[in-house]
Amino acid sequence: MRYRELGRTGMLVSEIGLGCEGFVGAENDLARELFTAALDAGVNCMDLYTPDPAANRFVGEMIKDRRERFYIQAHLCTQWRNEQYEVTRKLPEVKAAFEARLDQLGTDYADVGMIHYVDSMDTWREIVDGGVADYARELKAAGRIHAVGLSSHNPIVAQAAVESGLVDVLMFSVNPCYDLQPGGEDCEDLWADESYEKELLNFDPDRVKLYETCQRLGVGITVMKAFGGGDLLTADSPAGVALTPAQCLHYALTRPAVASVMAGARSMDDLKRSLAYEDASEEERDYAAVFATFPKISWKGHCMYCGHCAPCPVGIDVASVTKFLNLARAQGAVPETVREHYKALRAHASDCVGCGACEKRCPFAVPVRENMEAAKAVFGF
Figure 1 (cartoon, rainbow, N blue to C red):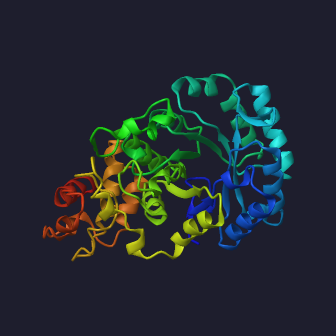
Figure 2: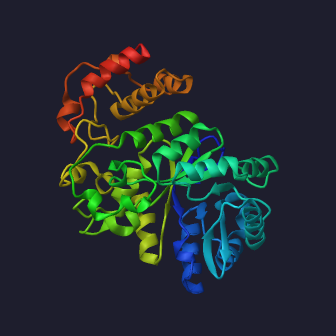
Figure 3: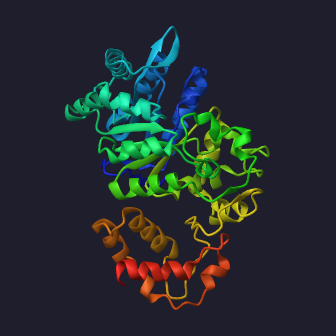
């Protein structure tokens, strides 16, 4: 298992994490088998959106001997009422539900206090003005949570939250189909058939901006819906082509600021397919070739950081140079951290000899030589 820094939090998380779907309403034996297999594989993080007391107690039992080495995203603004999950923004209910959750988990802190499901600007304003944001800050100051998180499907709302300075961790839906869709308040539009009836060209610019802002500000991204709820793995995929779990995971894990994918697993087969990513070959992970065949979907001219441009005859890491260039463009300046990361590269844009070999290999017709000239002008070498 490989581990990544979760933004500025100081946490080192496994790049494959656990979603909690398999632990809600699952038979106890299956849940125990799933969790044990994940732990044995080196998984050390989990998203726990559900306020289901039974699920929380189960997770607490499973991690009690490794609590300080296992990172939990425990959601704020969800409560258990009438034997079912319910969203609430009422501060007394938010507080009572969080305290109940810690009690059920058998712990006195959550690693990430994840403000749940903020998909509209009205909801974001309610979080800020209604006391939830202040409560999250208080919990962090008291050590009851170690980082403030927020989950969203809307890049416009997520951008506002990230730029506010409140959020250390963003949980966001990341996959190659959703990334083409504009931000909206109804997340169901992301997987609605009619959303894919027209031709889709390139990334939604708000999503590009969000990922690069998170990278720049040190906000770690944990990914939900990397498989589109399983839709991307079937022939009925919105892409028109079935993808593999390894391709979906690699796509998500090559986006800026992404630290971990919270992979849902309702069976051992589901879990094994996600964990197999760690041992997958470059060919098995490669998403670029199949992306280039998607009907009605095109990423022409947009660098996907897929690495097909390599090897460069003078050793330039073209994908990294392009990523740092995009970060600088998003900022409108060159942040010191971006400059230092660029400087540390073995070869730079100024080393480009203009041979064009990279462009011939690129499945997305990216003007690499133009980008190298632009990077040389931005960074000065």
